[in-house]
Length: 483
Image (cartoon, rainbow, N blue to C red):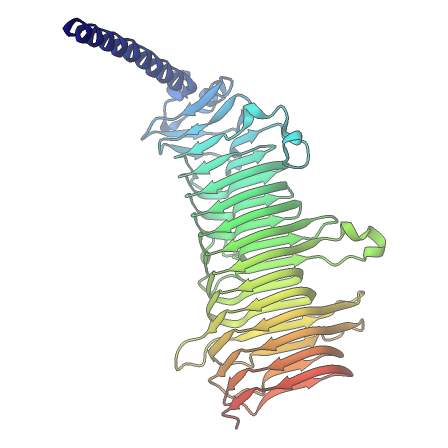
């Protein structure tokens, strides 16, 4: 029995020694591999004093394989673009070192081989070595608002996080085809042009979340191209001051070219603010009008399938401006101190659902503009505004007539309004206006106005005028305070 216990003990000790050796070897190997993955920039001659041009050192390092690693506390001056091949360079570990850009150039141009459309596995064969490049802890700036921090070109799965881009012309620019881009927990601010620019790009599956993005001509610009499946969530987006005093928008989407599309986007839980500088609204969607018979229905520019949910809009002349946009949900947002128009809709649109929002001015002050203004019609085209819902909203402490729907002056072509629901809203004006709700269009059919509560100092509550009116229901509304 004693011999058996001794044998068991000896066997256990030997087994533990073997396992320990295996684990130790494994850890050593892993550590060695991790260390070998890093391309330490100082080994290629980089000085990092903010005065010496380190461009050549970066270009040498970019020919290696691995992750470029910068030295904390250093400032590296770059005067020419550093091109990074994503099949060999797996990212940049910035360690909060700074890149000082001299000249109007991109600091880093990340190039992959994503040339096929789609994101499904067959379209990405051969790109495995390029997946999930990581840019982390990188600071990029200039002394004169020139240059761009990063350009993404043909990438798949690039992750940009915990970085700081400022005093540049642009922060991040996307061109050509990109897929699965993640931009999270960054500081991007003080841009002469755009903090993030989707520049005529074919980019699907991108996530922009938990960033601070502020002070630019346009904070985030989606300009033509083919952009789908975009998550813009939980960011602080603030505009006001801009380098050239030319602030336009916090977020702008432009589809002005044939076959340009922006769709399947969720804009959720952001604070979107201005300091009364943005000239074209906090959020602006513009789709050009084309004749489908001349270019084909599938090639008509399209902005739609977008959800604006749980955002805060404040401190601007206009909050949301939509032109020729469709299939849109505006739900559960808070709008405060918008001096001219909270939501503007031009040309026409269909499938727009504005539900459960709060629109307000300052208490006991004549402030806060019109809640909804629709100015339909476009010269050279017949247009319509249909399948529209404005329900369960609360609008109060405002000083304008709250709802105005009309045809644009001087337009001879048709503008038809149909299938409209405006129900269960609370409307309150603190200043005498002509009508709280004023609808003046050539044609209005299949519309219901019901169960609204209107408290006002105005002369009238609701006016509907037009040449062709039919199937209208007006019932169960409460109106109080008419003068």
